[in-house]
Length: 127
Image 1: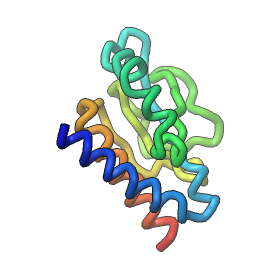
Image 2 (image 1 turned 45 degrees about the horizontal axis):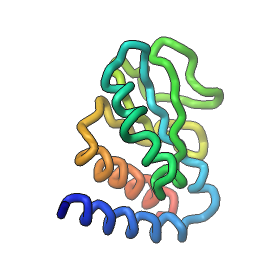
Image 3 (image 1 turned 90 degrees about the horizontal axis):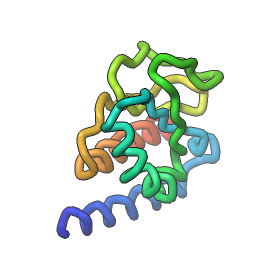
């Protein structure tokens, strides 16, 4: 219960920080690399993705899905091709990879890690 309360406070702080960003920062995307048969991907899509999509994090960086062996979304440039599913890649306004999270560490660790990625990305945009 304490972890959920702390997460709620962290989300509120992130939402306030994100609402003050220039409009270009709103063009971030969170690319989820997945594949058929990935049970972790299926669990994420079932349990976490719906909450993410309506969260402040989802407003800042909408979730975009791509298949591990399929083409990347148009205009996306990655540092390297992912080889593990799921892999979450923060894509900047210019279409370039900013950061990545390889694997899914579970809900308790996913949210703080994603928020740290967003904090570093917004610091780079505003700094």
